[in-house]
Amino acid sequence: MRRLRLSTSRNLIMIGSFGRQRVIALAGTLAALCPAGAACAQTAPPFSQLLARTRDVPRVMALEADVARTRGLAAQARARPNPFFNVYAENFAGDRSANASNQQQTTFQIDQAIELGGKRAARIAAGDAGVAAAQARSLDGRLAYATELARAYAAVEIADRRIGLAEDEVEEATSDLKVARALVGAGKEARLRQVQAETELNTLQAEFETSRAMKTAALARLSALAGASTPYVGIAESLLDRLDARPATGPIDPMQATTVRVAAAEREAAARAVTVQQRLAIPNVTAQLGVRQLRVASGPAVVAGVTVPLPFFDRNRGNIAAASAELQAAEARAAAARLEAEGDTRAALALVAAADNRAIAARRTMATAEEGYRLARIAYEAGKSPLIELLVARHNLGVARGVILDAATARFDARADLARLQGLSITGETVQ
Image 1: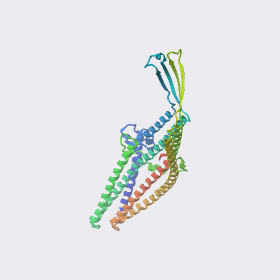
Image 2: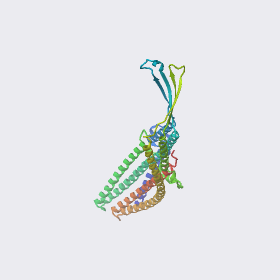
Image 3: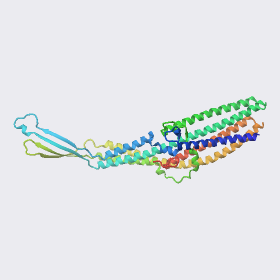
Image 4: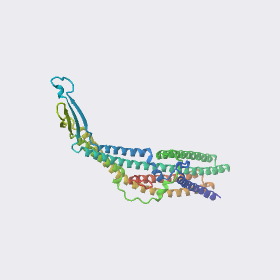
C-alpha cells in the first residue's frame, strides 16, 4: 500500500510535467490557428514568428531612423555650393551736376564658389562611411534586441517551470503533512513534527506565490519588448527544449562579430572625418561673372573676377586636431573590440561545453535525489526514521529539481551569447 502511494505520487508529478508540456504545445497550436487581432492572439507566437513581427517596435524603428539620418547626410554631402546672384547699382542718386546722371550704371553678377583640394570627394566618402557605420550599429542593435527578446521569452518558460516545481513541492509537502498528522494522531510522533511539516508547507506555498509573481513580471517584460498591444498570457513553444536538438557548433570567427564590425566601421568613419577637416583647410576660389549696363554706352559690358581668401588666421587646425583625436579613440575601441570578441568567443565555447556537462550531471543528481526521497518516505511511513530525515530528503529533491532548471537556464544563456557572436538568433535565424 505504501509503495502504491509512492508510485502514485511520482506518477502525478510526471503527469503534471507532461501536462505543462501539452499546455505549451496547445498554446502554440492556438496561436497558429487564431487570426490576427483575435482575442486568443494574447499567447505569444513561436519565437521565430515573434522575432519576424518586431520590425515596428520602437527599438528597431529607432535603429532604422538612425540609418535613414546618415543616408540623408550622405546625400547632402554630394551637393555642390549654390551660386549667388548679385545686383549692383551705382550713381543712381546724389549730385547730378556735371553730367553725373550720365554715369549711372547697373551690374548683374553671379558668384560661384569652386571647391578645391577634393573637398566634395572627401565629404562624399565621409558620408558613405557614416552610412556604413550606422548600418553596422543597426545590425548590432537588432542582434542585441533579438538576444534580449529570446531571454525574455525563455524567462516566461523558466518562471512557468519554477511554478511547476513549486506545485510539485507543495503537493509532496501536503502529502507528508497528512502522514505526519496521522502518525501524531496515532501517538507515534510528537506534535512538534506536525508543526515542522506545517511550517515547511507554508514556506513552500509562499515560494509558489513568488514564482507566480515572477511569471507575471516575465510576461510583462516580454510583452513590452515585443511591442504587444495586449499583454501576453503565455508562450507557444519551449526554447529550452529546442536547445536539445541543436547541432554542435562549428568554428567561429571572432572578427565577424557585430561589435568588431561596428568598431571597424566607426574607425573608418573617423578617418574619413579627419580627411574632410584637412581638406577644409584649403581655401576655396569664388569665380565672378556679370554684366554691367552703362547709361551712356551703346551696349552692356562684361565683368569677371576671382575671390581668394587668405588663410592668415583660420587654418582649421582645431577641427583637424579634434578629428584626429576621435580617430585615435576609434582605433583604440576597434582594438579593444577585437580583443573582447576573441575572449568572448573562447569564453562562450567553454561555457556552452560546461553548461552541457552541467545538464548531464544535474540529471544524475535528480535521479539520486528521487531515489533518496522515495527511500526516506518509505522509512518514515514505516516508523523507522524521523520526520526530519524525510524533510531533508524532500528538500534535497527540490534542490535537485532546481539544479536541473538552473542548468537549463545556464545552457540557454551560454547558447544565446554564442548565437549573438555568430550573428544569429537563439533559434538559428540570421538577424538582418
